[in-house]
Image (cartoon, rainbow, N blue to C red):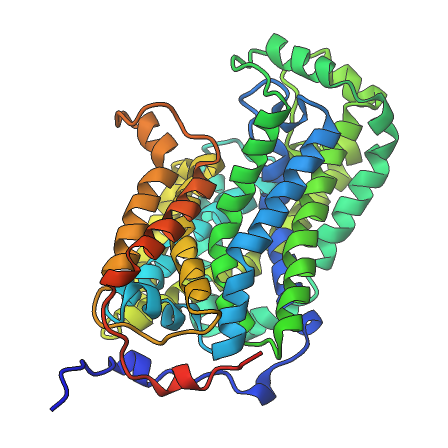
Length: 475
């Protein structure tokens, strides 16, 4: 009798997406990813990241900010998307199945399976908080009022309920909704582009200092590093989900083109336009006047009414919030799918209900507003996962080996060490004595995951017999 463990039922039941169900990159991968980066929380948050430093990402001028955004976009494509898209395209299998070659058949249920689902409720919290803030541009409710909390409650609960009962209806309209933020960005740019030539970074820094911003302005390298960390933190989980999106790709070209357009170009264009809009505004007479009052706003969403007027700005903010609702639903359905896979005996209404309650609490207490911390935690969690899986890909010359037995020690040690490195700045902020914050800590987390996994390649658990591993595409 063989001593090789049997394959768990969730692996045995997994079926690759067949070739006839796949489509060109411009029908699936590119538009899905572009929709993610057209979410106003991404581009507006990227423009305002580092606002506690005088001048934020514009302290060294807008060309430097564009360099940082481009660097972040390229890193996200190369390290956090491409291999995962190829894994999905070659195997036709989703991330929680492919990840079992790195973390084991038992371990894969937790990493990346359950963790991916759990983090989705963090995205729900972010969505609830910022969508409510956008809606309030029109409603004008007082912060902390019952009305604000009511909007948060309805928004989050509706997202989870529709995810479980009516996601197909949300999907029907979500295809066209990204047009709205794209148009909004272009309109805002048209209104402010005339001020780009007159933008004075030093005047912005001086106004921020006069308004009470205590931290000094970042130099060019600091700006670039900040933007890379922020963009990677936002993209890490979405990039790993490229494995799921890649199951819809017909060949390598679909993976490459879908990623270049949907990830690299979409990040650069959306976040780049947002940075130009802020810089351009502060080069206009209205923006220069606002600088004399101190405390300049670096968030494009916060400048909507200043650029477009109160009424039009409120309408645009309302529409941008509506465009964000499908992503709240999709985050919920990803969470529900992951939890159902890992905890099959738990009613999804109960598990998602608990997740929704946690998301609502994070939104209502304002924790969800701390984007650098949230994105940093997401990046620290998935950075070493991505690093270990990329190492697995190259060590096996681009082929998926199939699931490994139990908990694969190489993958888990790589993740633990990488997570500590990725979360190091936040752990320091919480009082853990880990020295000075590391620059590019999320990239270092990825590298640590890859290197440690490679070094421990001799202590991996056995590969389980799995027919699907022998049927992957050779392309």
